[in-house]
Length: 133
Image (cartoon, rainbow, N blue to C red):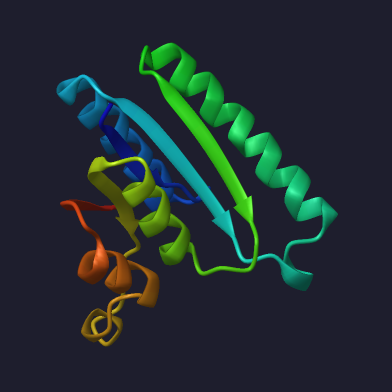
C-alpha cells in the first residue's frame, strides 16, 4: 500500500508539514508515516527525549482524531534527518514526501537548509515543501 511520509519536528514548520501530510493522506486514501528523526549525542539527553516523547503523544492524539491510518517512527541513531526520511520513504514506497521549511532572512534564502535540499534533490517521489507560520 502506498503512503505519504512526513518529516516532523516540534516547530512551526513541522506542524505545517504534519497538517499538509494528513490532508494529502486523506485526499489520496493512503496511510501516513510520521518520521521524527534526531541525531542523538549530547544534545539529545534524557530531558530532550522526554520532551520529544510528550510531543509525539500530542501528535498521536491529533492523528487519532484525523481518521488517517498512521505509523509514527521516532529515530535516534546518528543519521541526518534527510537520510532517515529518504530511506523510510523508499522502503514504504511513498507516493509523496512532505517536509516543512522555516522562514529565512534574505541572505539565508540564498542557501536552502542542507536537509531540505538533500530531500528535494534525492527523493525518489514527489516532495511537498510547506512553510511554517
